[in-house]
Image (cartoon, rainbow, N blue to C red; front, side, top):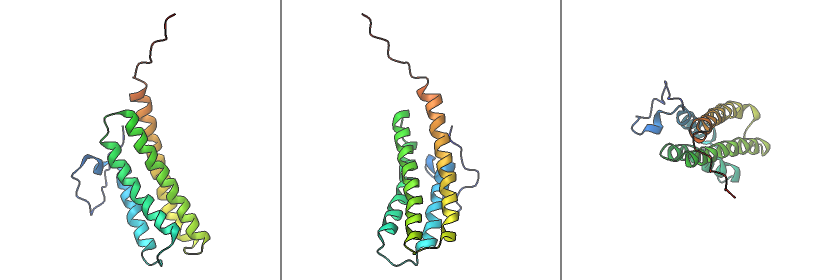
Length: 143
């Protein structure tokens, strides 16, 4: 089962169930970190636009996944959030390569993303083991 956060982001009042999830709190923390990092960068920068789109997508998919009744649908949403987190890491690398940011500036964010992805993968494994393993296999066709 996915971990509930014991230290919620202080600026968010938790009203919806997904807001208490540790992985959701990690995602919101990353959004806040990114905003501070990139607020003074000149716009438009393609990699920055992509970063903003993908970092927004992570908590959206987590909220969507938490509302899904189907384990398969939850896994699809969580996998989309995982892919968006990987895209964010790549966008940070691109911003460094384009000399818009320094390598040292993105280390903290990439560590946050790594932890977020690890939490997602653990939760996805839990869903697969507990919920999908209980789904009965279709019977073999009889001849």
